[in-house]
Image (cartoon, rainbow, N blue to C red; front, side, top):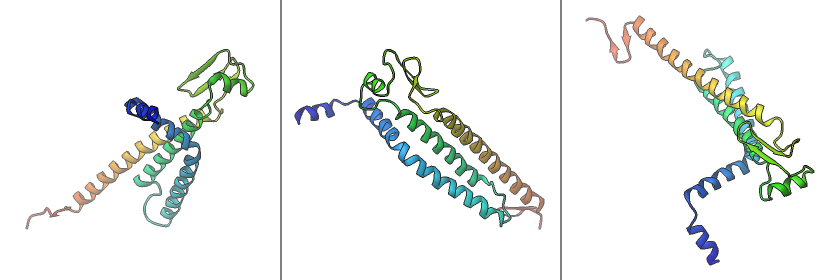
Length: 174
C-alpha cells in the first residue's frame, strides 16, 4: 500500500495527461457512436423542421451542430485507431497473438498506423478516411457557419439602413 501511495505522489503532470488521453481513447469506441447517432438525429430533425418554416435549412446553428458531428466522427475514428494496439500487453506479445511476426513493430501518429512486421496492419482500414472526412466536415461546417452568421448580420444592417431605423430608434429628423 505504501508503494502505491509513493507512486501516486511522484506522478507528474505528463502522467495525468497521459491518463486522461488514455481514458478518452478507451471510452471513445463505445461512447462516440452513440454521440454521433444523437447528433445526426438532431441535425436531421432541425433541417426537416426548417423546411416548413421561412428560415433556411442550414442556418448558423445547424452548421455548428454539423461541425460538432464531424468532430464526433473524427473522435470515434481516432479512438478506435488508438485502441487497436496492444493495450495492456507488450507489442511483441500482441503481434504474436494476432499471428504476425513481431520482429519489427512500427507505429505512426498520422495516418494512424501500427504494423507488426511487413504486412500486419492492426489499425482498421476505415479509421484514417473517417478521421480525415470528420475533420474536413468539421472545418468546412465551421467556416460556413461563420460566413452564414456574418451574412445574416449584414442583411440585418441593410434592413435597418433601408428603413431608416436603427435598433435604438428612428434616425431621421423630426
